[in-house]
Length: 160
Image 1 (cartoon, rainbow, N blue to C red):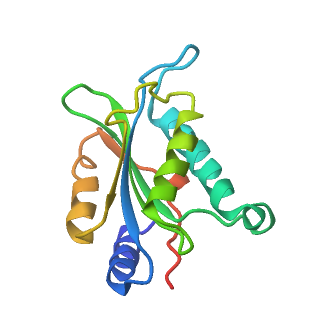
Image 2 (cartoon, rainbow, N blue to C red):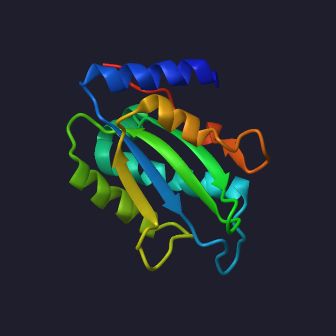
């Protein structure tokens, strides 16, 4: 995936005012009864969450046309406690509002294998106000081995 193209798409959506971008951070338990969280399992877990979210939003269009939530994701290991988490930029569907989105992503998150029981600071959703700084923040650990761009869950944005 071309980072310059993603950056330009995010900047274009951010400036267009026709669609809203949200910045989502998801924190996970680092192990479940059967599995330990690593970069591969965190990508699979996010894929499951985004698939459930797409099904909730797009219903028949998801089944017929494979319509999905547009997103850009990075999996990162925090330096302080070494816990894996996701940073995701999501294009909010036009027919939706933020409260509805938070309800749906929480519902999808709670069904995942590595979801925390206590939701305090485990799901963070914010509006994107400065796309350039946000991209820099998401890429801060890419030079180290502490972060990976999640190609599996990064889809191209729908530019209206």
